[in-house]
Image 1: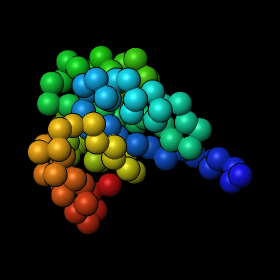
Image 2: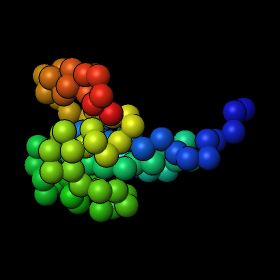
Image 3: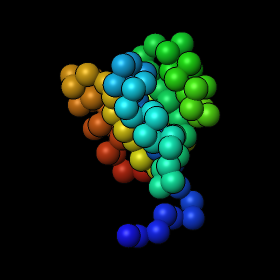
Image 4: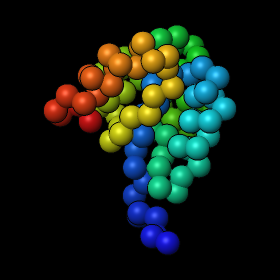
Length: 94
C-alpha cells in the first residue's frame, strides 16, 4: 500500500446536488489523499451550504474554482459537464 502524500491533493467540486452531497463531497473531504478545497454550483446557495458542511471554500465562478484547486470532480448533469470539462482541460486552468 502506498503511503498517503504529505500534502493532500486540493480538489474542486463542480455541483452541489444529491450526488455531490451524498457521494463526492464526503469522499473528497475525508482524505487523506484529497482535500475538498472548493465547491462551485450553478446555485450559489447550494454550493455554499455544501462547502460549509465539509470545511471548504465556495467559488463564485467556475474559473475561480479552477484557480483554487489542483483537480476537479464533476457532479453535474452530462450536458453541463462537457463544457466545464473542456474549460478545465485548457492549459493553465488548474
